[in-house]
Image (cartoon, rainbow, N blue to C red; front, side, top):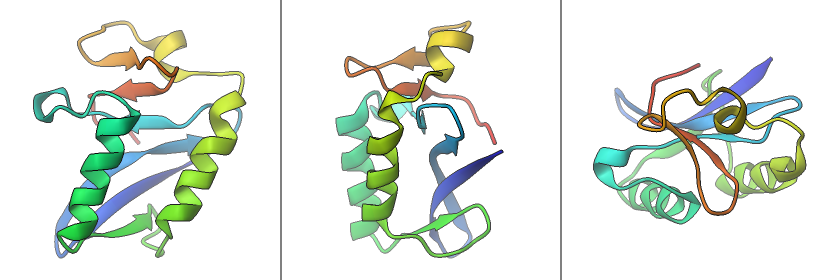
Amino acid sequence: MGMNYYLRKKEERVHLGKSSAGWTFTFRGDKNNGVVDFATWLNRANELFNDGYTLSDEGDGPYHFSDLLDKIEKKRTEPNNQAKQYGVDDRYDWVDKDGNSFTDREFS
């Protein structure tokens, strides 16, 4: 079982990624908008925060961004990585230079 994280503003929802037991964090990338690694993902998240978005988990509960960043850091050593193990098409699934798993597909 995993937990998805979103930035929300009114009716708009931006998927940031998912944390699952035994897996590294899977980031929701966006190649069309240049979100291709952790640095660009973090910049995009900060831009949305500055635009009034708030962070929540899939249960709509509020979540602190520092807690999400801590969770991501702790999960870096998990044995499984979505893009490495199941990325069948590098147009949609990739691993950044730091080993982070990204997908440009919608997932839950």
